Length: 507
Image (cartoon, rainbow, N blue to C red):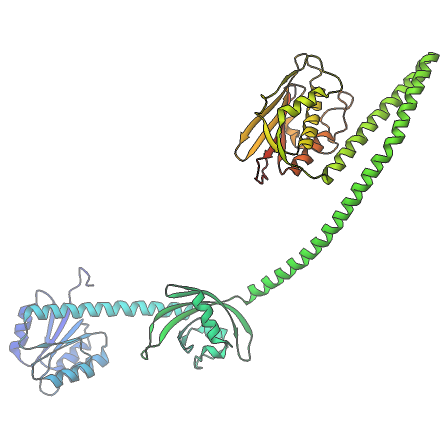
């Protein structure tokens, strides 16, 4: 513990000149030695100088070594004290221990090697004590200045010491006795049981307790206690750091109340919304269903008017009848699409393994008119297997095929491809064409209801087909997305979860 540049300072007191000379001669190279012929001379020197170790002979006129060392202990307690005595001076040793608090005693005649070792050990004790005092002083500064309440208590719940913040928390005056835990906690054994549950090594972390201060507030706290040793009676001592969380508890209670109120309001609003959606669905279905008959009648009557106009060679009347016929046909198509769209939510999925290539082949064969010059590219049978509802898969592929045929009709080398890929826990299929394509910046609008990226004058349609595709994919807990560029065609991707998985990914 001795620093490199510091020599041990030793004061040796003896009334015999020969002993003083022998001590100085023996240890002047090892230590910084000072000698005194009497306790009075030594005390006067100590009053003006510092020293690490004091060594005193026991038998001296006027004042014994034990009496001298007792005075040194009283006036300079940090100095380490050693006593030189003979074997017969046992009582002197006892007195030196009791009164002088000596570190050790050395018998005469001394052995130079042993005495040197004793002095070095004594100095090391001096250094350790100084370090301990510095650490304690540092701890005391932290203890007193801490903004968090800190107290020392034993395992019986008696407070031994507390810092100013703890006194302020417990509404104690600076000079008031610390008190005990039972004054502030109604069930101390229960608190100790909670502490044991939170034990980690020698610490008890974040124990939630409530302190009821007499004639004061009720304080919600988190206590972290650490075992720091034992007192003179053998009771365990703990340092307890207290964190006042009363305001946080109030905020949490308020937040829980707000969450409960919000949950109630959300439940009520959700119920109202579901009822409104059910009513809207029923209304939409009723309106669409009731529109079909009048529209069919209009279409039939327009056909009849067109025939009669042809017989009379009235071109104007026939043109008007054809326009009525086309308008009624578009409205019928829209009504049919709306009916399919409204039925999607109410229909349950019946999952099975489906060969997407086989379903696409059926869709191609069921096209109203076979498109001329279109090349269809399909996977081999059994390669594009997905786990889905067969009827819904057919509805999806029918819509995608109709779109691909419609948007490639201006190309002489039209090509429509159905692709498939296994991707982790999902199966991805896509329908790709080389038609007119679309602006890729608008790909997020593709699956919206009534969203159209091309004019109706160029390409007919109701804007519901891809919205229906999106809704069916959501019922499968899958996803869909589109990619394309003007004049370079478009690709619609469908991601189906594999059997037994719950896929909620976005592309």
